Image: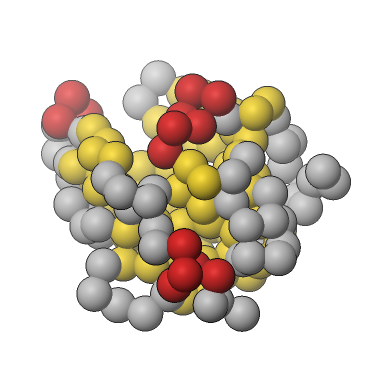
Length: 135
């Protein structure tokens, strides 16, 4: 797969593969003691399961291709390179590539308090029929 962004694509995201439908890749962009940024690249049709970040908001900055994110109870929103979104702490959501396009985003967490209180809760896959209906 060709890298859709100027950031490194990284290696297959095997450590989190069980929480994704399709292939994703993970590259560390910044790894500081209290703050990290990762580039996540999704092959066409790849998306992660619904999940919740406890104890912090998640910022996604689209850097290549076209993707989507969705917060539970809201309609899916398109993300294109140069766009960003902040997912509030403790909010069920998912994100990934558009059905026929690759997608990359930078992802980082903004702690809401104690760094030790942050954690991810992985949930069910996104409904395949609803996902495939996205343009």
